[in-house]
Amino acid sequence: MTEISEQQSPYLEFDADEWAQFRADTPLTLTEEEVVRLRALNDPVALDEVRRIYLSLSRLLASHVESTIGLFKLRSQFLNLRGQKTPFVIGIAGSVAVGKSTTARILKELMARWPASPKVDLITTDGFLLPNAELRKQGLMDRKGFPESFDRRRVLDFLSRIKAGERHVQAPVYSHLVYDVIPDQYVTVDQPDILIFEGINVLQVSDLPKDGNSVPFVSDYFDFSIYIDAEEAVIQDWYISRFMRLRDTAFQKPESFFHRYSQVSDSAALAIAMDLWTRINLVNLHENILPTRQRADLVLHKGTNHSVDRVALRRL
Image 1 (cartoon, rainbow, N blue to C red):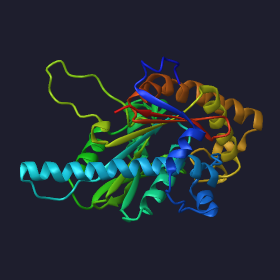
Image 2 (tube, one colour; image 1 turned 180 degrees about the vertical axis):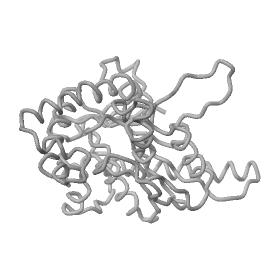
Image 3 (tube, rainbow, N blue to C red; image 1 turned 90 degrees about the vertical axis):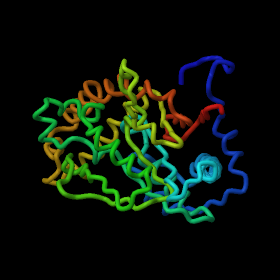
Image 4 (tube, one colour; image 1 turned 60 degrees about the vertical axis):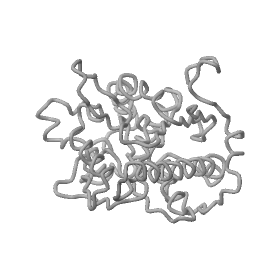
């Protein structure tokens, strides 16, 4: 994180041990086996990490959800409104390979096990990428994951319908194996109490119009946002390590988009991974992802072992 004075920072910062104290009496409802199932490839989060970091975060989110429900009731009374309560939406952003999906899945499980047993859904932005055929047509295959590679209108339509309390809202499905959106396949979101929306560019903004007309950002629909952070060199190591592990797993499948990378030597694969990181993912991190960090309500900073070592919470 950029070093600025405590007085200037919009965040309150805590080390992992300080943050862990805020869990209070929040119960640990996950087992080690469940955590192993939830964590992503090359993200060795353990049960102790859930206890140290995620229980306090779960308690904080419970307070925010409760406060939002209370505000909704007061506003409904004030305006004499009746209708369906809108879901509490949590955005999770950060670089590729930084552990967003693991964080999202752990939070989903923890929140679903709150005493109120809320309905929690998780959607990633991958399904909202333009299909590969369209990306090739527009010359964007090497910009996949950049803001322009997503169907932004479709993302905004999805979130606006979720926030409007609509039922049976469909989100497109993405396959990491074939590296493409699956045609005519959807996941249905049906009035959840909480929706987690995870993706590298969910905190991204666009240029504001000079005429003052409203242009919604994806983050306009968030009630709380989280940015997963780590030093650039550390993320690079994680990305390359994951790529090399995938050569021995998913890339071995003939139907994999990256199957050809399983057929080259280790040294050639390492060079390919470094090129993909430097030419595409690092550029995206610098240009689009990292600049959105300061827009998050909470920043989880990870050390080299994937464990969170610092937490920054935006001041109220």
